[in-house]
Amino acid sequence: MFSTQAIERLDQQAIEVPSWAYGNSGTRFKVFAQAGVPRDPYEKLADAAQVHALTGLAPSVALHIPWDEVDDFARLVDHAESLGLRIGTINSNTFQDDIYKLGSLAHADADVRQAAIDHHLRCIEVMHATGSTDLKIWLADGTNYPGQDDMRARQDRLAESLATIYERLADDQRLVLEYKFFEPAFYHTDVPDWGTSYTHCVELGERAVVCLDTGHHAPGTNIEFIVTQLLRLGRLGAFDFNSRFYADDDLMVGAADPFQLFRIMHEVNRGGGFEAGSDVVFMLDQCHNIEAKIPGQIRSVLNVQEMTARALLIDQDALADAQGRGDVLGANEVFMDAFYTDVRTALADRREARGLPRDPIAAYAASGYQAEIERARVGGTQAGWGA
Ligand code: AOS
Ligand code: MN
Image (tube, rainbow, N blue to C red):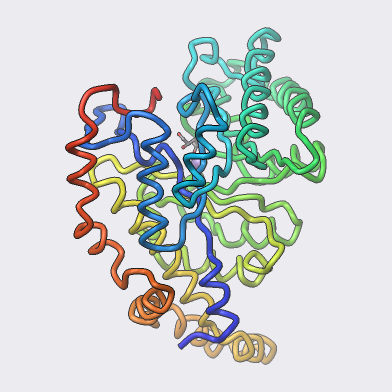
């Protein structure tokens, strides 16, 4: 079914899983605890290792600081390596401290800005200790009411704070700036869209790139166009994959709109994002509030793989030919033919050929791992949004 090049790309596909997906999570109404949830980053990595062992798709794990602070990061790295994993992106957190009520890097008070900068410098230390090359910044900064603060001054303060952080990065480290158009601030956010993130990145320098979280756009936004534009500009640093029906809710990627994921993956392919040497990081940013966490992560990486596989099936020559001739319906048919192709059996065959289970979800259920962690992880404090 697949070309040799498509098989190569699928075999090399790597999706980064977030440590926080394995901890308890919920909404502002309720966090439902689950049995067997990790108590610390070591146990989170053990769970992430299951996802990789069963799918071959998830070799790295993103950490969130301070949730994943440990006394000895060298030990955590050894633990990751012993599980066949590596530490990926380091995510900063300036949204849970009282001092950040009115913002962090854009705050009017220089002391608060400095505290937020210092937190990022701590994240850079963690990057050095773990070999991580990406510092991902998502800011809760913004305002709730018109006139609440000076939007223009906030941009200037943000630019200055980001520059101070950027200067401290090593030559092989990147600053990855995420955008979000609302929440927790409801009137304006300081990095609301890809254009604002891009503008700050260009001002900072070549190692500043944009993170596109698929849940962070207004309904109806053509996200694949943003993917194309950022790849064209050389500034698409990372994805935070998830899906949403209404607002940002971190549901499983590919659950709400598989066709959108297919269109995104086509633009990634078209823009060189799967080529050797591409440094686009394909990360998940999800929470499994009501479903089981490890199978939820397995389902998610498989969804990304499936839509990637379908996108790689597009007959590029036929598409270019139809586009060149102005054949509107013909071009659309070539595109849709690939989308409507069921690749699940072919991917199961490929997994089998690589020594992986044909059905990773069934293999997880049969493995006994869930019963084992539910038995063993008794006592202690379960990981959640606070840790
Ligand atoms: C928040 O909306 C963002 O998506 C961030 O990426 C955040 O750091 C992450 O969701 C963990 O809460
Ligand atoms: Mn995100």
